[in-house]
Length: 171
Image (cartoon, rainbow, N blue to C red; front, side, top):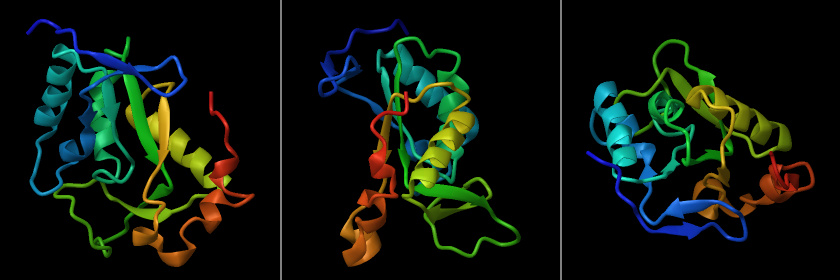
């Protein structure tokens, strides 16, 4: 399929321009149903072929699986691609049977730990670079910082003086 031209929009006051349609990569990681790795990679390839230039993932998605699968394709076709991921969760190896509840069908063997500290945000960013296999991530979002996930004290760590909030740019 030949690459199509999709309408793009500027992200805030940055120089980034994203297609109005992006690919959220959570489904690649097998939420609600198994997704073979080849099918996940083919989905990213097809999105690129259709002209989509914005891809969003997170460490949480399949406990790193979505970042790995998307990265397998995007690091070979990175020109013009805008890549985003999330911070606020670190992945730790699982030893033995998985104990925490989750909805991923075939996740990588990790569990997640919330960490919105400055060091946690930086580690999450660096870990995502490695999982994607790229040297640049264009947009970082703070994942699940609200009351529904953490209760009444939701923003204290993330927005406090020692939290990741102090970051202005990781460029």
